[in-house]
Image (cartoon, rainbow, N blue to C red):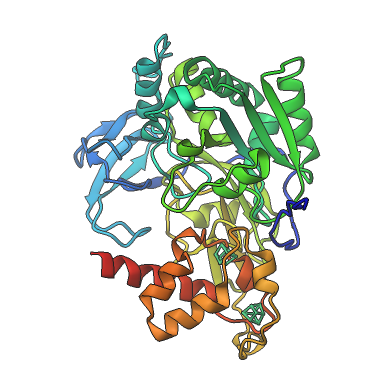
Length: 435
Ligand code: SF4
Ligand code: SF4
């Protein structure tokens, strides 16, 4: 019997208010706080001391292992302090505080880094400070250094940007097409996927689709694939399935099914470094949310306190109760407005305090809606039960490690069950048991 392939997910309101607004440049902040841990893996190690003068693009933190990433100064000025507490992660990783002189003097090392071999390319990707800008910030160089490169079929460039409000990747594809195209060409030249490179964009981003089609016209090797707007279209495993039909099994890597996914903004980081010598020192950030007066996309130096971005957007129309880094589905709540922009910040959203009385949790009514939308075909209510029973065998059977924590189940649940929290805690229990 013919089995119909159904793409699963949810359709929260897009609220892409800023997708047609040009990127505006933030004035140079007076002070930046640049964390040494803005990626997954080991933190970078500071190589500058208080009192030292630094220039834009100068290395201030060197990588400390294979899974690590170097950190560069986003301003010219004087190092004021090397703080041991990282206010973003709460971990004991260092942050460098620099007082800017406002002159933005570029470091003399900022020159093109031409590459002609795969190793030179990977070294340049590492030195650019590129990390996965669509997710947890996994360093880009070790991600590209896949062992079975000769079995790589597809590279998917992730421009899906399925979270509501967030439009920074869209603006990158529209306004920085040159570096997206260069990044794709570098991947084509050195990674040589056997089948093709696919630029993946949801159908609610016509400007980005047009820009990419223009950038790759008359090119059979690079396809611009228009996907239905459906959250979490941009999740890596979901994207691989929706574009290639390949399923990434539990515990496997994307490369095991011949695929690699790279965010569209990430590839502009190493292409800009190779072409112009500029490492990852600034980010385009969507500043939006129900109480932001003038939502915008803003280009800001890494380390800028987020209050400066909100102020640049006209401030708030009401007292902010919740500030998120990222979109409303998977974003992280920030403790205060002093938190700096980091490499992985793609959006900051401000909202009033949630009315807790409105979110009344009731018992599961077994409606099955969460099962219908789960992109990984999991059974969230059964996982929640297993969590309450602390039944680790059942948790394993239910394949909770396949959960990508997209929140679609909790979003659709009429009983407002805290499904994602139950899954996260179950994963922690399994991890503790394994340890
Ligand atoms: S179970 Fe996990 S993957 Fe499935 S919808 Fe819920 S959060 Fe997403
Ligand atoms: S959506 Fe909510 S109420 Fe419906 S089955 Fe899932 S957990 Fe139960």
